[in-house]
Amino acid sequence: MYAGIFLFLNKFTEMKILIIRLSSIGDIIQCMSVVTGIKNKFPEAELHWVVRADLASLLKIDPRIDHIWEFDRKEGFSGVFKLGGKLKQEKFDLVYDAHSNIRSNILKLCLCPLSICNVFRKNKLITRHKDRLKRLLLFKFGINLLPKPFKALDSFRKPMLKWNVTEFNTPFDNWQFPDSVQKKIENLVLTKISDDQPWVALVPSAAWELKRWPVKYWQELIKLRQDLRFVVLGGPNDDFCEEIRSVAPDRVINLAGHTSLMESFYTVWRASFVISGDTGFLHAADLFQKPGFALIGPTAFGYPSGDKMKVMEVDLPCRPCTKDGNIICKLKEKKKCMLDIFPDTVAKNIKIN
Image 1 (cartoon, rainbow, N blue to C red):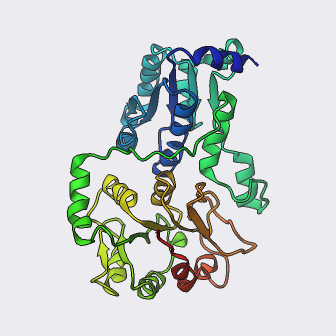
Image 2: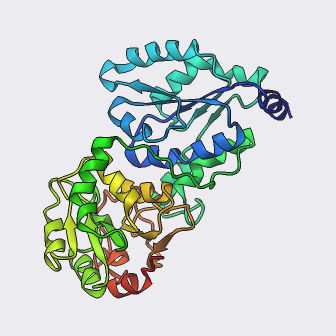
Image 3: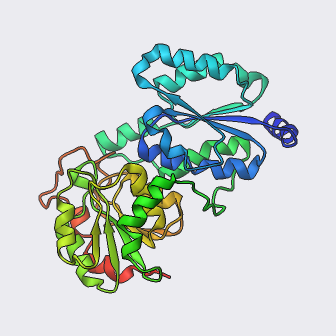
């Protein structure tokens, strides 16, 4: 009741809201989905965000974020307390800790010691909890008490119910990428594909090999869909991306090692369709509300939340077996969860308006 009264009174005054999410790439992108919900509920609110300095560029593409507080982890914990003191002076009306780690807890200690602010103003401070016990039971003992499927993006939105923030899916397409980023992708991609020709962004890489769809499957997919152009995204060490391009060099552009993280995200935004495993690029496509396929294998938390991204997966009793893919597959037929997602199934289901 107190939260409702507070939010009602502040509906007619300018509010200051703080989000704390320091890292990592995929989590920041998923957390960015709450901005739409906040702006729907509090359109005049001044929105601030605390993020690690090396990842601040991700947030800068959203003009609805009014102020970005960059934290340099090289400053250590003394830097966290110093930043907490600066944030305290801002007198935020609402604070959302979307990280829940040691550093974010220090910031909360500075802003709201021992959560005392919630005594006087209920739900001024809310926190995203990580269900650590349930994760332990899942990955150590195979006992799954988490929602099926677990959509991490939804887990960032759930705490906002305490602020009566419920509508997150309002279309937003005013992402603001730097001019230099746009010009580079225009030169590398858009000048080589006609405006009326659909093209698909492929993300064959992943931090851990266990999450990767086989190279030969990507190649077969390209062969099966000769009506489409493809753009491959990857890092400088992903030499296999050139193997993928080699099956149809006239229809495939390989950007692996040629684009920055921001340039790759811009490519995802401009794509007609996106196919990716459990990566930050998948979450970017979900955030941008792009149509596409999520190739989900061993991991538990990579499921998209939007209705335009379809999940391709195989039902196996051993899934999910890992948080991020950093394990050794225990099956005799290694990576069966990825190998049984067949290229012809993916190819025939690609539908681009």
